[in-house]
Length: 398
Image (cartoon, rainbow, N blue to C red):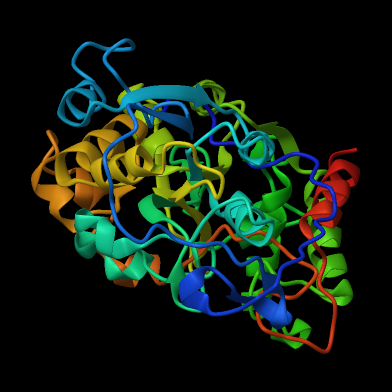
């Protein structure tokens, strides 16, 4: 079960992203719009563990049996490697970025709305995947992606993934929705009972809908919005605000809201739909016709890691078949390691979370940090960065 909201970053100042560039294999390179990536060396060879590894993680990612004696993928790792795992649980991506800048932590489980900030800020190092044996078994659909790599140089190892779905009460919402238009319809009969994810990154959901329904806007990537495209998305969300009963920022409260009928339609995660169903709420969750946004988390290593060898040993362990299966079931997501599906206690877990269904995930636009240098590759315009998204979200909510 997911123990704590996978929240996106809150206020994030405009990034000053400087670097000397260089060869991608050495950690330098160019990102969208020629954005320079600081040159950081990657570990050349794995040495002796340093006895500890300092980890920043989402709640539920690093379980040592203290929450539930049956849930423990840390103790065995510590015994095998001699690396004591010291965990700092973070509640937001912004907190993770801030903590990684201190240089006190070795690895972090970064979501896509933080990973590019860490890469272009020089806070994480490129990863030598030759030193991570389990990397070869990671689904190809998660490797060398815009949020975890630059110039085909990985800056971390994929951990898990999920889609942001549309959930509705089957006894109330009729006919059954098939499109995100159901949550944006100004004349919706469900006004006051529609819910949405409470985060600036939710602007991408509106952009995705517009990308599919208003092609004249020219949106090619929901995380790359120029002035006109951004205004269209934020205008849509401002209108939607009149329909919203509440924005959810706690998955347990969303379960309760759908059970009570206070919410009947809105964004959700598969794990929330599963919990609501288990709690006898008459709900279904779908991937709408337009596709959806989603998330893929990445284990990244600090460019200032004091325990790099233990850091690498941890990254290899946490994506190993059994450990990755354990996290995926406990947290509620699709595992990154394709061999994990044979290790889950619930043999239907990977089917439920579409772990092996690349056609399903081809319809998912994973969270990616919006940058002024458009992440869709355009160089003739400036896109709105995450700071602008954060400011706009505050205005939208009123």
